[in-house]
Length: 355
Image (cartoon, rainbow, N blue to C red; front, side):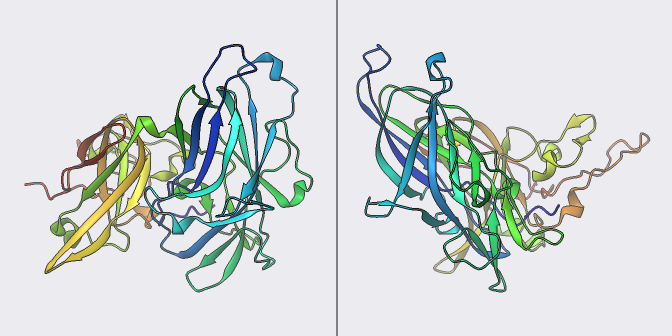
């Protein structure tokens, strides 16, 4: 199955929740909580990725008394806050730290929760109310997820046309909570295969992050790197702290894990497009990662994220001390390290040619 290798997405929606006391005997104070799905960058070969969000099922799971209980169903709201049957959002319109708010003012008891996001599947019939993708040549294809049915104590009325996206269990704390759900379309968005005329979203892989424990990374790439790494797609890849030779690609979950000199290659945590910006007579090459958990990271540069052949595993010859590096990352520009600070925007060192 073809993976969309030209895209970086940290994804999309904003949901405002209110954590309240009561029902648990813990006397927790009423506080606000907001769940945000943040989108970063866009596919090179599609113009729009539109999801028709139908509703959300959410259920508390940290108490045995909740077993068998129905989940709470949250309807979508339009931009004015009025309840609506569904809400279409073009993920590519929300970059970096921007987000689309789907609903607000929902009261919940603090605790651990399970949540499923239901969407209106698009089968490629051309219905403008469904989920769909507009390709580079203006062709419109349906967008759906190969998962449906009950979740978090809820069963949709029309399972055949209702797709289901799952999140991991997350916590609503006492006090203010601002949660970010992020996913990378390089992992979860896939183009049509076989006789199917629609794109698909994986049903899982959407991570929730407390924004209070996250920050933003801004960075730049030296023009010499851009000029010397000749390719069609300039991207910055984010990894746990590592070095260039161990930076793998987004297919680590689809192909056998491979290694370099006996060490496992790492899959990227996220990717961001390197954008060109003109300032007076200077040309700058910049990128940004939003909603990154607090921690230490490394960033590598690639100009060939659409060329999967460059990332194929290489069987090392035992007689060769330094086998070829099976990585899309440009090896002549050393990775830069950066530490993310909660609630702050940090600037990474410029990605430059090694001296």
